[in-house]
Figure 1 (cartoon, rainbow, N blue to C red):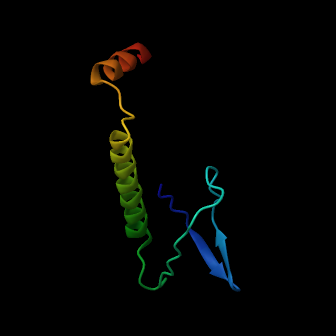
Figure 2: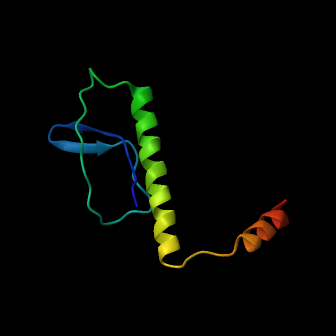
Figure 3: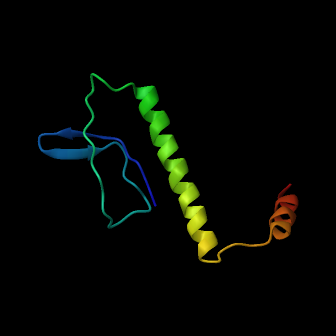
Length: 82
């Protein structure tokens, strides 16, 4: 799973703008950005793209583990939600 959370580095500590609710212990990667060279809109788009890629990867992993269901069942369930 890939989860991106924005934050700031201050006084030797990383302060997250939000705490992830579904994560307890996991490996992290920290990337320091040059604030003079970062466009906040482009950064948000990049984060969304990374999360989309992670979601697609998770879908492939579920298919490989056999955690799928027939399309007909899915369509039938969606019709009942209307």
